[in-house]
Image 1 (cartoon, helix red, strand yellow):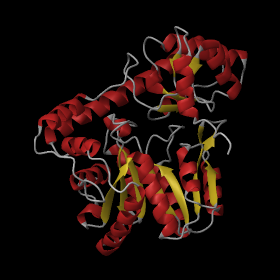
Image 2 (cartoon, rainbow, N blue to C red):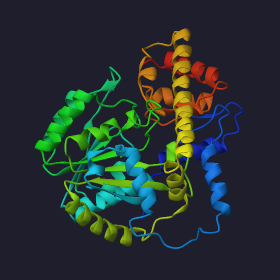
Image 3 (cartoon, rainbow, N blue to C red):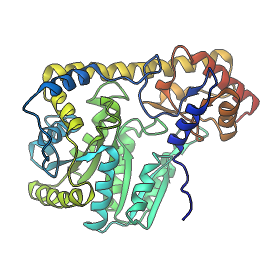
Image 4 (cartoon, rainbow, N blue to C red):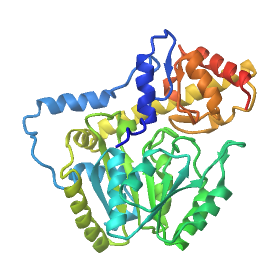
Amino acid sequence: MEIATPIEVFNLTAQYNEDNHPQKVNLGVGAYRTDEGKPWVLPVVRTVEAQMATDVTLNHEYLPVAGMPDFRLAALRLLLGEDSPAIVENRVEGVQAIGGTGAIRLCADFCKKMLGYDSMYTSSPTWGNHLGIFKSYGYSNVKQYRYWDAQNRTIDFNGMMEDLNAAPEKTVVILHGCCHNPTGVNPTEEQLKEIGDLVERKKSMLLVDEAYQGFASGNLEQDGNTVRYFVKRGFEFFVSQSFSKNFGLYINERTGNLAIICANKDAKLRVKSQMEMVVRTTWSNSPNHGARIVASVLNNPAYYAEWKEHVKTMSDRIKMMREMLFQKLKSLGTPGKWDHIIEQKGMFSFTGLNPAQVDILMKKYHIYLLKNGRINMCALTTSNMEYVANAIHAAVTECKL
């Protein structure tokens, strides 16, 4: 047995923690940070947790196999909207999962064993776990479609469509709902229509990874538009929801949901029954702490309003850091175009820095980021911005693209 390759993002944090340099910066961390560089427990989450701690009616009994009903329904309403045709027609089901990763695993398992899918296509680049999850379930054809145009720093839509058109029929196609990780660039409405036409023609199955609802625009409704578009078109598809980012529930809570949009109520009931079998043989029963927090907030109008403000606060800070970095690089006269930094959406920016430049930043300036140039925008602060911008300028000047 060989030693496995270290997981890059966690290995990066380990290197950062071992570094004693006074100006070290970790731009690789995949979590929200305040302007002080600290994790943020949302105030409304603290309020709900305090209430839960003194609520003598709560217990540690098992949840239903599909998860907490109040949480699942609230998650679906957040994702699809109260007046969604899928909700009104009672043809959508939610299955609680161990974070977004767990939701994707449920989808991969179900599509393989129950629907006979053996092919999965995801974007290049993408969140690395997409590939690993589907490979672990024995999919024999796991590939990436072209997505990022490195020269123009936007979507390579023609390449994407060519690759998806060449995919076998009955392929699971992963799209990012909003805030594409790592590029921060998502298809336009017209492009979504073309993608939908192709997926429909190829009899493929969509899995939309919705990990950052609210982080793109600061508006939860607007950030759900990709998913809602496919619902309106009558697609049967899956959506993995994660509450790690927009609720700050990263570690012990692991709160996710798999939304399953079906053609009718009968199909929904049959799918749910089979999904319960998948859950039973995977983790058997979901944890209730994070789900109870999310359900308590989403089902209480006052808490929900407060949470929406928290989401907007996080989104606004990310946008501010984008603008600050762009202006700093512009004022320094850093070689190349940097408009993409303010055009991209969400927590991450695909900077366009090449591996040699990343190496300079890490070894010379103790700035840690993924080798593909992805940085977490909210790991930037008003205190470290000048240092980081100057370091990027120096690295790009020394080793031009």
